[in-house]
Image 1: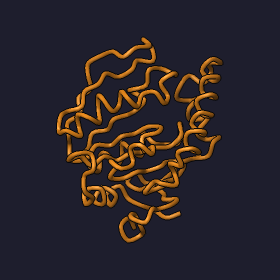
Image 2: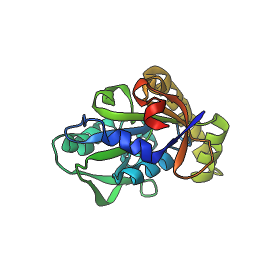
Image 3: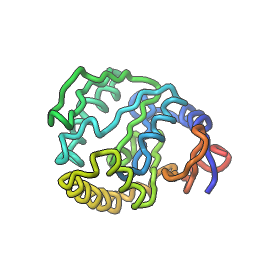
Length: 208
C-alpha cells in the first residue's frame, strides 16, 4: 500500500473537468461499514464541498437500491442544470421523510457518498470514483456498533443488506472501474489515506 493525501486528491479533482453540468461530482462508494463517511467527510473538507449521503434518500430498508430515481430527480437533475438540489432526509425513527429540506448548491464540487454512488449508470458523469473497502469482520462490527447491533431484528436486516451489497458490487464491478480503491481499515493521520489501487488517471505522480 502507498499513502495519499486529501490535499493532493483535492487538487486532482479541481484539475479535472466537470461532467455533471458545471459540477465535478465525486462518488465515494463501498460496502456498509467500510469507512465511506469518514473518507467523504475528509475529502469534502479539503475541497470545501458539500456532501450528499445516499442513506438520507433511502426509503427505509426497502430503499437500498430503489432510491436512484429519487437521487436523480431531487439531486442530480437540478445540479446538472445549474439549480440547487433539494431533498428531505429519511428518518429511521419516524419511518418517513421529514424535517427541513437539505439544500445543496451547484457548487464546483459535490461529494456523493453511499452504497452504489459510483455505479455504472453514473460513471459518465463522475469526475472521480473512489471505492472504500475493509475486511468483512471489521465492517460487520462497525455496523453493529453504530446501528443497534443488540437488536435481533436489525441483525437479520443487516445480513440481507450485506448480501445484497455483495451481489450489487459483483454485478456492477464498481471497484474494478473506480479511479481509486482505498483501505477503510487503515489507521493513521487524518490528512492521509492508504491506497490499495489507483486507476490510470490517478497514478503515483498525481497522488504521491
